[in-house]
Image (tube, rainbow, N blue to C red; front, side, top):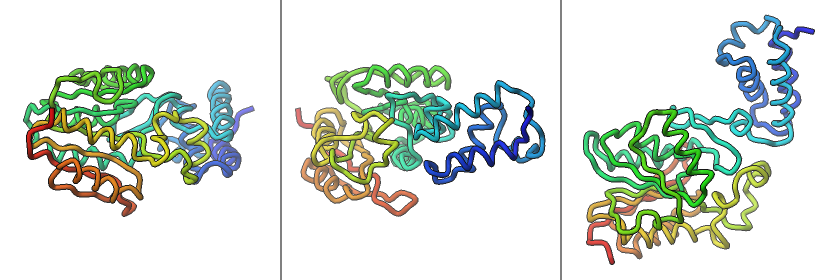
Length: 286
C-alpha cells in the first residue's frame, strides 16, 4: 500500500525520538537516501505517495538500524566533511564538524600555490588530508594510520574525489615516514581518557575504540605526536593538533616544554578550546 512522504517522515521521526537530537531531520535524511533523492525533494512532494515498495522497505530498514543506535553515517556509508562526500564504515571514526577548525588552521600555514609537504597522522577516512589536498593541490600530502581498514577507506575516498596526490601509508604514527621531514604536521588523534563518562553511548558502541581512547589520561597520543614532531618538522614548520575541550592547557604545556614557539589554542564554533598549534623555530632534534 502506497504511503505519503509526509506520513513516512512522521512515522520515522516518532521511532527515532529516543536516539536522535533531531529525529525529524534524521528521518528526512534516511528517506531521501532510500528514495535516492535530495532532501529538498521531500518538502516539495510532501503529499506525494511513495509507490516504490523497495524504497519504502529500505527506509524501514534504515529507521530500524538507527533506532537501535547505529549512526546515520554508518547506515548510509557516507559523511560530508569540508563539503566533500566521504565514504565511512564501521572501523573508521566518523568525521565531526569541529575537526574543520583543524583544517582551517592547517591551511593558514600552507600558502596557496606553494609545494610544501604536510603530514596527517591518524587519518581515518582521510578527511583532514583530503580536505587540505582539495584546497592546496600543489602541496605534497602524506597520511598515516595504524588501521589497515582506515587506510583502505581513505584511499577509496581519494580515488572517488580524484585527489591522487595524497599518499596513504599504514603504520603507527611516524613509523611509515621515518627519515622524512615536513613543513606541517596535523592530527586529530585519540584524546579521550579510558574512563571519560561524557562519551555518548552510541559512540562507545559503534565507533572504533582505538580511534577514540588514548589511555588513562587522554593525553598519551598527543604526547607521542609532539615528541615525534621534533624529529619530523622542518625549522619553521607547524604542528596543529585537535584535542578535547578540557585539554587546551595541558596540550599547550606539552608544546611549550618541547620547545615550540607561537603556541596558541583556537576555539571551535561552540566556544570550546579545540585546536592547539605551535611552530618549530629551531632545528629538529635527531
